[in-house]
Image (cartoon, rainbow, N blue to C red):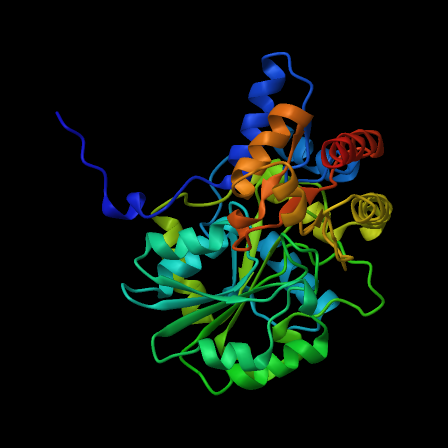
Length: 394
């Protein structure tokens, strides 16, 4: 038998961030000393009270199917969280709990995108947005914003990108990979454009909401432009803020017809998220939120270290971040000095010769840059910066 794969799977590529992480692990297993700066997950353990809630759930027999869209208790906790933290009012019927925020995004695209639709994606972008759109036959439309604008698109750029075929706009703030966050006023200005396009679903990916250290509090476009309530989907989860990446719990909040369609998609794919993970997420959202700040403080200290070291290296320039645990330095001069043809070859050269794994900027839609994750120890970061400095100064 000659196996023929579907056209949709030929359109997409494996996640570059996961590929880099796997490559680093492969080299380590072969005995090489590689410092991984590619992984997009906190290096902290899940807070003890959250883990204990999961353990208790398992011991108490909470090991069966739950409703497809999540347990009533967790959905109520999400409603409370969105009101408490964001001033947004939802009913439980407007909430869908999924196996990570990534599945929430996938469900949304499955529910609304048709062949030939357009999805407007500001670049740099999280690597999975375009490929998800391609799975459903939609066309990614990129708006590029460089370091001179702190990687944030303008209302004028957004207006130019919108067409009658636009079906979705995705905003991610604070951003993976850049660490930049839109202000409330900036989001309100984007909202003023989008309200003239009621056929467009606005998806706000808020997964890094709590990993923020700028003076202005977090805001998403649903908060800054409440007139868009009927066309906005809020996506979030517990992975980043509570160091729960492996627990796989994300959620979406939005118009009830959309959530109902996403629930239908989920019912025919994964069904409900893991019952034990939902119990842990309930403890995360309802419990003491004081567990978040020490992690944020650590990320900020690491950010300051990496930023200072990078900007002292020849051929490297890095803008400061508002949050997350990534920075996105411009490295084209360093690449040229090392004789790399492009940033993919540059990243391969660094992992092989310097023992440092990072993700090339082209994976995020902006060649000449690289994403560096500082979700690792200060000791590892110091060693990695020493290696990069030696590579660029040689």
